[in-house]
Image (cartoon, rainbow, N blue to C red; front, top):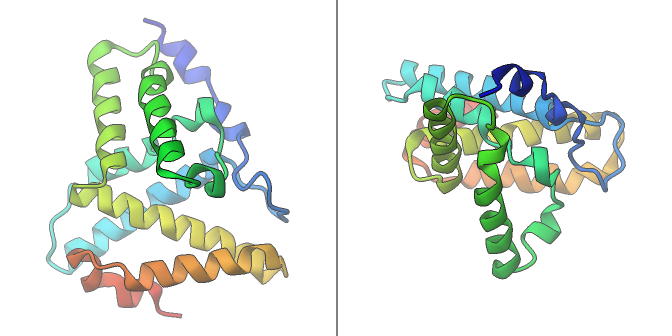
Amino acid sequence: MNIFHHILNRSLAHITRFNATPQHFPESVAEHSFYTAYFTGLLCDLLREAGEEADKEKALSMALLHDMEEMFSGDILTPFKHYSSEVTDAIRKVNKEAIPQVFEGLPEKLKESYIALWTEEGQGETREAEIVKVADRLSLLAKCAEEVKVGNAFFEKVYESQRELLENLKFSWWEKIKEPVLEN
């Protein structure tokens, strides 16, 4: 066990998202994870105010862990990642095999807990996983909006598609808070 070695690993701060797209403000995976976690907490609080239940601690943990595999894979370009079901399945398989390495040095019980949270988020079947998926999209939308505001046309189509996706998302809990979240 080497917890300190694990703590010293800041590789996600050096992995750039959208690495094939011209950017005014390069964003690291660590920055993205921060905003995803922040938006996750915000969504959980809005849900609580709307009378809906969500395990905020679990959702926040998922959000912080949701892209940890990128420590090894980097930010794989979306057109490649979703080129075919075979490619997508192969990436998922490699990620599932590599994720234990991300948490090397941690006590076994904690390592297993983090892997389980990462897996649950990836499956997207629980309310907390759905919340993280929406927060992940909101983080992407915020990044795109920032780039578009300074004239970066490369992010316009991504912004429009993500905004439309969020507007049309049909999670029952999302329907209750979507309007104030997406209001301009």
